[in-house]
Length: 420
Image (cartoon, rainbow, N blue to C red; front, top):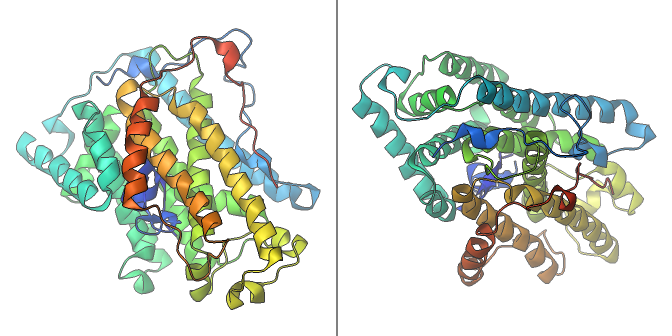
């Protein structure tokens, strides 16, 4: 299970909204396996004729889910994620209304000297460069404050993911995760445990980031310890939110929203959420065979049954017409989420768009590779070649040059997420 730094990192050393690189199982099994001018004023909610106010509903990914048979579960998942998104958006809006902050390295943020804090950030950058090369390259175009903050977030997410997916994963218990969460709370109170925690403590002091998405990511790790099957897409959606969607909520305040954007803060968060879910679903589809070897099936069981597939079909790993048809529907869902995510990437601050576009485009290509392998994700691993990556980078850069739409009429007021 890996967490996808949703909008910025990609597990394969690339970044998808931080999503992929951080966690192997969430975004990419390598780091996100499955689980990407800090002008805060750029994060303000922009007025828009006819748009819904903060108090009105903003449908999330969970609206994809569910039919009456899963009704209660669907509502609880939707309400839970909706509340987290609205809380994060409100935090941003409150902080921006109160004052315009100009981030900078503050030695008082953590015990120790300014030089130690700079060293902490530098170490985070080294880790990001080692495990998420493409994404790291994109971060170099960001302002120094954003760049350092994203590195710190990446490292915390990676460390969290490795608790369950790392070399000591077999020895991790719920108690260990409880201790990690207590350490997180100390960090948010300004009492970091070590140098890497200190970098994140400084980051959350300077940016309007709420602790809840961090806690939810840890909850995703707990879920991987106790759960290996998902009855329907709503259950899977909640898991994807925990391990990947959270990364988007954490990262948007750092990436920043373009000052000229006409989109609401909530809609940008929803798009980031869509990207996280899309990345995680892509990881899941790519790693079906690997997960089966571990006794895990991260696929909606009700949809498998409707397609005439059983768990034995997954464990046998035979590509049949039933499997191909099932995979086509799963890939279609992931692509629709990527489409929704694109609408949020273009709203980001100009200096932050390139790494996110690169991550999105590269991760999306994994779905193409699954198709090219004739849907054999049992014994063949879909990956994007270096040549295709090099081609995608300039394309992502060109797309990053296009800013937000100049008219609100071209923007949807909400995100629609298909359940099938």
